[in-house]
Amino acid sequence: MSLSERVRIKVPASTANLGPGFDTLGMALSLYAWIEMKQDDRTSFQLFGDQMTGVPEDKSNLIYQVAQMVFEEAGISVPELSISMYSEIPLTRGLGSSASAIVGALAAANALIGSPLPDRKLFDMATNLEKHPDNVGASLFGGIIAAAWDGQHADYVRIEPPAELETMVVIPDFHLATSMAREALPKQVSLADAVYNISRSSLMTAALSSGRLDLIGAAMKDRIHQPYRAALVPGMAEILDEAPNRGALGVALSGAGPTLIAFIQREDERVEALQTYLLETMKKEGIPASILLLSPDIHGVQVLDELQSISFMDMIRGEVTT
Ligand code: HSE
Image 1 (cartoon, protein in one colour):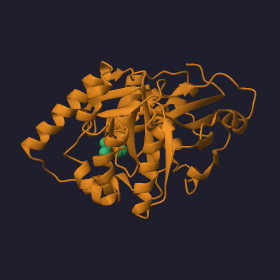
Image 2 (tube, rainbow, N blue to C red):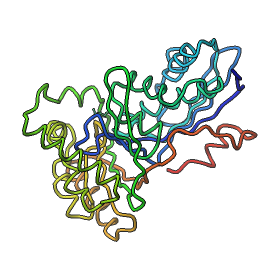
Image 3 (cartoon, rainbow, N blue to C red):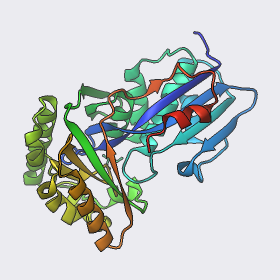
């Protein structure tokens, strides 16, 4: 096993569920976090950017802990690490920040020790930590992921996003913990609602696989989580109803929220009007919000071999997209 002295990785954000595919569908987005991991004599952290405020800088740090799981699984000891991280993925907004941290840590630690663990093993480890495969699968593999988790192993298919597909996300300026958004859900759903979701989730998967953007509107609908979460996100119910009339192909809560994601067609001339509508609806509810136009990320987590001679922060300055 060949150990590197230092590795750098770039890992995308993600949106989960895509409406009906609760805990099964995910898509990677062009918003990123970067991690540098080095073997060292003593563990230390350099955490950059607003998103890192409050993140622990000792061995309880998630990146450190997840890296140690990789070393243990590979039967190798690397107890002391120097970890640098910068993220442009907002925390607890439904854009998969914790999944990207887990996947980034797994990929960096695995690369540091010569990549003994295959991606499917990293996927199982990531899903075991996150408990659902939708965000972690997207961050790991890029593109669109359909995945099923049996409690130990995740089976998945990666779908290449249709070339014309873009997204507009509206990010409300408040945090919503996934645990709280899951507590809002009922323990049981009716057969009618289950069938409603199974059919639309299947249609969504088939439509995305075959580039049928015209079916997104019919498919991107849900009855098993969004109706229960709408009370947690002011403006959400109205936007889910109305955005498709304002240029969105379809619209959904992004993961557990509070971000909302509209699928749009590349170069659709209604984009500006849609943006104005989304911001005004949030404003009407008294919620400050920001908008990002994001593309599907098709790479997933990447080990960066270039730019090794420049410092971590200089590399980030050349890369950030927001
Ligand atoms: N599928 C999950 C949920 C994603 O909606 O709760 C959140 O990380």
